[in-house]
Image (tube, rainbow, N blue to C red; front, side, top):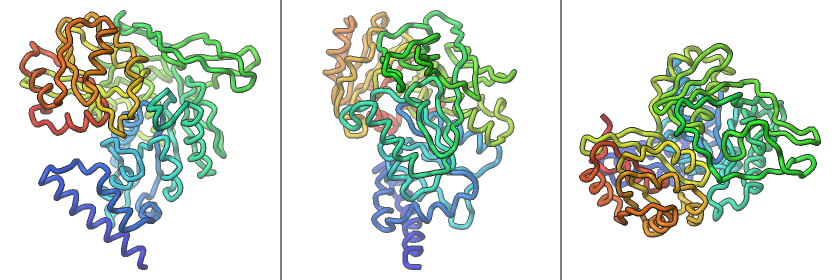
Length: 439
């Protein structure tokens, strides 16, 4: 009874504190409230289980967690469900608790929870929070100071999976690391059959490739088709190969949207890039399995999470904001950048970004060599970014370390469109700048 009282007390305090933070604009409150809730009620997640009556869904992986969980949440809500989701992308333990505390209604159970989970924190979340489904998007090199090599990241996720015997996995069949995760029941695979590029510029090849060895014999994997990074139709002479996906799609990429063709259905998504097509396919596969209706119609109305292909307006100029945080993800974003736009790159090295910014040298900023205007760099590591651009062959670079001043400058100097490429904590700062408005 005492612990239950602490749970309800933490809910009340969380909601009042969030209201205060919103009024004063002191903080976005994406993790701070979660820290306080756990101080008041360490078993908060255990009690939170009782307020979700249907399925508990988690999404993890290196890239695409926020977009994939956002798509799933959107499709579930469009079907009339009450869904709890950490939509702001705060995916460590305190961020997850934060989202649950603010969205749980003690007088009405939610139908679903859709929680994106940091790879390193999945095990801690699963210590006390139940799970029915886990979507794993991909595994790329990311924040080496936090995770180390990919084998370490993979082990962290598998440790979380091992906590839940009946967990249904939805795995990216095209990723040779993701496809090998195991749980107590057979996984469901999704994958891409083929890709059609409607414009040659979308097809730019990347030289940043990962070599993966066969988990059975140790020889390098071979590919019948390779889409980007290690993702594709892989096989080995020893007999190991890509599993046949239950959800297999053809993807048509346009400059402004993408089309996923599967089982004689077409799903149009307002997202660009092959990486987003993978995210959408994962969401479609899960929602199809759950029996959710109206997926084709509802996908087109999806609004992206902040900073993930998000459109805002600065001084009336269309501004596209694309989060970058590791080489593979950055490369896929860089392929889509409008070189006629005013480009602003904002690089921070706070804990949530990863302290190690050596990834800037692995990402192919050479894609920006043809930029028609000067490229503005900002953030804590503005000078590192400027040096990287210089070596990439970019000649016209403007350094403005203060983010707000850089935004002001971009708004004044841009002729029409603006592209902003920030790391995570830079994105949080940019999101607070009032001049950037939704239409």
